[in-house]
Amino acid sequence: MRNKLTSICLLSLTLATQSVRAQAQAKDLEKMEWFNNAKLGIFIHWGIYSVEGISESWAFFNNYISHDNYMKQLNGFTASQYQPAEWIRLIKNSGARYAVITTKHHDGVSLWNSKAEKATTIPAYSAAHQDVLTPFIRELKKSGLKTGLYFSLPDWSHPYYDINTRTRKRYEIKNDPQRWQNFVTYYQTQLKELSSQYQPDLLWFDGDWEHSSEEWQAPRTLENLKKFNSNIIVNSRLNHHGDYETPEQGIPVVPPQSKSWELCYTMNDSWGYQPFDKNYKTPNMLVRTLADVISMGGNLLLDIGPKEDGTLPEEQVNILKNLGRWTSKHSDAVYGTRRGLPFGNYKGKSAISQSRKSIFLYLEEAKDFDKVYGLATKPVSAKVIGDLSSKVNFELNNSTLTLDLSKVNFDQDVTVIQLEFQTPFELLKEISDEKYSLTQILGDKNSKLAVYNIAYELHTGNNVFSGSGLTNDGMNMKIQTPKTNPETLDWISKHAEALFETGKGLPEGHYSGMSALSKDKQTLYLFVEGTPTGPVALKGIKNGIARIRIAGEGSIISHKTYNKLYWSQTPGIVYIDVPKERLDKNMTVIAILLDKPIELYRENIGAIENNL
Image (tube, rainbow, N blue to C red; front, side, top):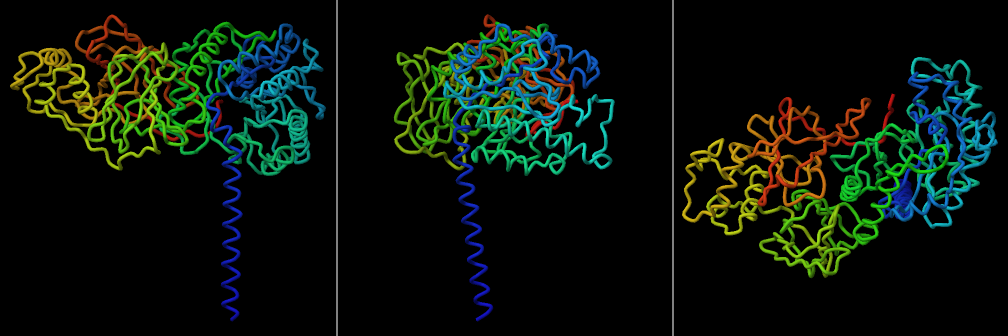
């Protein structure tokens, strides 16, 4: 009887524990809903570093400037043209659903009137002589956008923390535990002020790498935050006590496994305002980055850096305006969407509605047709989001959906096709490869379709030219077939180097399209469909690039790498300019000569560790 009672008690305890855990998971899902639906947020780095236009905090940490001279910027921070309502108008019109502002960076300068012991604040010590955080939060809340506050855990100017550079060691906590406890009290006092005064929806921590969770007293910090907002969302930089991942600058190649994640990303190479950093991505690049992030199920937190007087650089304003143009036109395909189709099903970017009754295809080029593979459900309609005059016809044949885009007005950045279903769509567990034979391909009267099928077969590792009589230079070919489309044969001859003995292309995430690799794996061939709206983008290539050219006609073309950071192993994103006058009407092939056999970066991206 005793054993039976013990078993019953244990079972009851297990069931109760499972019930509590399920309730907690349900609550977490509920609190994250607005964040997962938001897709776009705006990050704001504003502080005294904008006076001289130097790196925020890192300028003195890295010994580029003395701490004393860095702090003299307080005398030049005026906020004389600061109009928070105008900031909010631009942010809201960009399509962002939340904003995150730096309340205090590692330099310890607080934007609000902090009463914490020995705090350095803008109201008390700067030329502005005013609290610049409160009016911004007031306007932010009036707008209906969610409130996010960035807060640096370290304070490299505070006497309880120690003025710090990369070459100077701070005190050992074990040798002066009271001093450290005084600092913990200081920073938690500031968090209490921020929580009570501004009721944030989100806390964006930074700098946790400098101490352990135990030293930061992270569990206590989180507990205190929840006293003010039980649904507070916290990023992953509180020593793994957060709710979502925050990869920085490097656009993921492999989608993060977390259901909630956010790419924090600069428009140029700087977080705060730096007048000589003109290395801005174009508005087109940033719309496409947003589409890329949405396709992987995340949010884009795009940064702006105001000047010391509170005005925004013209380049940043233009980027926000173009984002707003695109997000307002395509709102149904942005907000509330989830991670898109696997790359095996669609060779591009996509997203799925929460009901699974819609698939959104993001097209970065103007082209005649598109294909989706492995569809077990037939759509009831296909349309272009934001353009009722465009028409999309489609045909489902053996689980392959072919879309006719010949009557589509393409967007200047990203066109979105919505496939609608009567019931939640299903994908086949295995995609049945079409496996076109060379005879079928050469006999197709539609040369564009024939060339597409060649690229598809090569990308999947099926080289249809094996033993066909194709030569490596396309000369003296002995390809024999009863019915050959001469236009297709001409394309094959012109692009023979990309077809002769080439193998399987890049896996998912590196290129939004089809590709192939040379036999020695040192030349990468990208198949470029139609007319791209901007430069071709390539991610996660560890190699150096020797040269890039257009296959079959010899033109050397330029490329530029963005976001390759010296402290990070993550490769930058390569943008390749393809002159429109050199595009092939059937399909353009870009040949990328690498410094050695290709090496791919496919590591999972989580929170940043540091950027010393």
